[in-house]
Length: 207
Ligand code: TYD
Figure 1 (tube, rainbow, N blue to C red):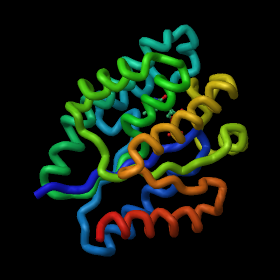
Figure 2 (figure 1 turned 90 degrees about the vertical axis):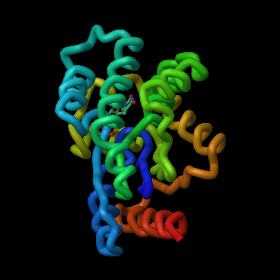
Figure 3 (figure 1 turned 180 degrees about the vertical axis):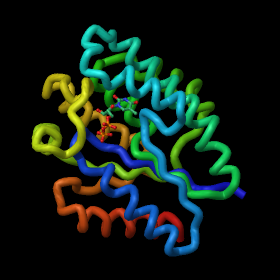
């Protein structure tokens, strides 16, 4: 028995984090066992790595260090949590996953994307999502939302607007490269409308 691996992706402030719990409730109401997690984090070890990545005091962190920390947090999450639950037939929903690394470190920081892809493959043991929901939003609008209280402001948010624009464009490219697993939704709609669209997308994938 194998489960279903769903990831939510998007630029900072796209509103995906508020969508996870209602989606999980919806799937549970259909009788599925659902586990939700988020990245970076999701295990005791990965949460400690998250603290290092996000801390505003770590201004001297080199982008290469940052990339490797995201990968190490993910390697632990995949082995400790995601794989075993998928193997047990559960639906796993992750708020961010490997595509975030490609969008932020690959496109945002401009690292060699073939190399990032190989590193991701190593860190995840090749585990890819079955379905990825991209909540698309203008980079400026997303950051405005963050600054006006939509989530905690962290070291990643503090990168230049240009960085966040490259991230968004990167997501668009990723979604077009592997269209079979991506569904792009308009993140500027109300949370209720976004949830409705997410449920429709997941239903069509499940059927
Ligand atoms: P978080 O507070 O979880 O924000 P969000 O609600 O936007 O997910 O912060 C995660 C930040 O880390 C976010 O700016 C995206 C970034 N990130 C990467 O740069 N690479 C990665 O591989 C992951 C998982 C996240």
